[in-house]
Image (cartoon, rainbow over all chains, first blue to last red; front, top):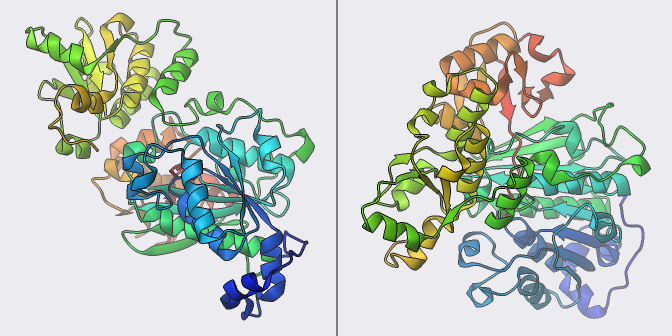
Length: 418
Length: 90
C-alpha cells in the first residue's frame, strides 16, 4: 500500500543518531523515518493498550501524538498500564503519559484532549490526524471511533482485549471493511464482560498494543501488508495466532454509503451501555434507558453494617463472578448470582423462552428488601435495572453504593481490595 | 469430527472447554449439536432459531455470512470458530 503520510519531516543530526537502527533498514530508511517525523497519530485512551502504543510510537519517532483520556491514574491501573507509575497515582492519565513520552523522546509534539470522546466532538478531535488508534474500553466509543473514521476517511487501527485473548485489525473503509462490517451490532448489554468485570492478563495489552503500534508505522511508511481486511486473533494460553478474513459488507450502514452522509449517532443508546465503566454514569444512562424516573435507592456500607448489626433480616445479593468471591466476600451474603448469568436468565425470561421460576432469578424474593452488591457498585446498578424491568418492586431493590470496595474503605479496613 | 473453538468469554458455558468436537453435515447442525451438549451456550448464540447478529461464525478463515450461512456444509476435519465481540482496552 502507498504510505498514508506524503510529507517528509526534517531530521536533525541528533535524531539521525537516535533513529540509526531504523535508518539502516532499506524498507524504512531515511524516507520512512521522515514520514514518521511528519506524521500524526491520535490515541483514543491512554490505558492498557494506550500505554505501550504511546511508549513505542514516541520512541519510534512519530512527530505528533494526540492523547484522548480524562481518567486519573489509580493503583489498580498499574497491573497493565505501564506508562504510569506509583508517582502518578491521583494525577491525570494524560499528564502522566505526556511526562513519560517526553522523557522517552522530547522531539514528540503532544496534543492533550482531557475530555470524553463524544459524537459532538469526535470529528473535530480526529480530523487533524493521519492515523487513529482505538484503545478504548467500551462498545459505544468503539462504534463512535469507527463511524467517525469512516466519515473522515481515516484508518482505524483496532485492538481489543479480554482475559487471555486479543484481536487486531486495521479498519480503513477507503481500502477495505470497517468495524461494522465485522460487528454490525453490539452485543446486548451485560452479555460480554468488560476487562473490569471479566479481568485481563496484564501483559495482554502489551502484546496487542505493540502490534497496533506496528500497524500504524506500516501505514504511515507504506511498508509491508497492513491488517486491512484481516483480523488477527491471539490466544495467550495456547500461544496461537490465527488470521481470519474480514470482508467489506456492501450493505454496511456506515461504509456502504458515501462517507459524507455518515452521521454520528447516540452510541450509548445504540449499545445500551455507558461509554465508560464509571458507576454513577452507568446508573444515569440505564435509568434513562428504562424510562425509570425513580432513582435507584442506595445504601452505604456503613448503613448496611448498622442495619445488619441491629438484627434486620436483609437479603444480600452478590452479583460478582465466582473468582471474585474467593478474593473477598461479605459474611452477610444471602445469595450469589453472577451478573452474566442473571442478565442471560432475564433476557430469556423476557423473550418468553423460559419461566422465571426455572432460572436462578427464582432465588430472589419479591417481598423482601434486596441489597445488591458487586465490586464498585456499577454491575449491581445494572442488575437492579434489569430486575426492575422484570417487574420487581423498584423500592425493594437497593444498591450498595461503592460495592465491596466501599465496605473495605468504610467498615472493615482489614479487608483486601482488588 | 469437526471441532468448534470457543472464545474465552463463552467458556464459562462450556465447562471451560476451549475446543468441542461436534457432529453435523452443516454449520447449523454443528451449532445445534454444540448447544445440545452445552445448553447454556444456546441463548448466547441464537435468538430462537436465528443466529444472533453480533455472533460471527468462521469456518477456517472465512465468515459463514459470505458462504452459505447456517446451511454451509462442513467436512470432517473443518475447524469452526466463534469470534466474540469484545471491547476491552483499558
